[in-house]
Length: 197
Image (cartoon, rainbow, N blue to C red):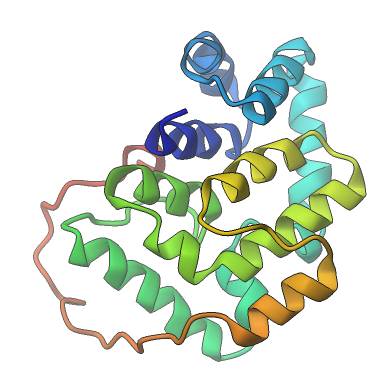
């Protein structure tokens, strides 16, 4: 499966499953040929709308250990997180995109959409967090884990097998370039990430 299509499909599946999500299910079914992604789409299509929404809330909204905000995996609830969020916005702006969503710019669906458009740089820079989220979702038994399985399998190199390997990846991951505030006051009118409008 084309990696850009996979990342865009995963982005659409990882947002709150409202009526728009249900309307997109036929498109997702026809677009995906990754087994893990197809398994999730089939499961989601079988759920009653209210139960799917409740499952999403139980999975993502009450536990940091399932956080869809990638900077949380690296910075937690510290002051460093603010600088990380600025770096995400700067990465979008450097590619001519303006972040307009209600979520924070490190929201995994936004990062996946960005990856679908310009490549997986932000996913690779935040891979330890993505892998830790994959492991946490797998341990909880939620079908949302299949989405992370598909995303992680699309990235170069093997996925960590357990939390110890993921923690080692986090400690020895790629060096980070500190991004300044250049372009923070850039004019509006840039293309936006449509998922986040």
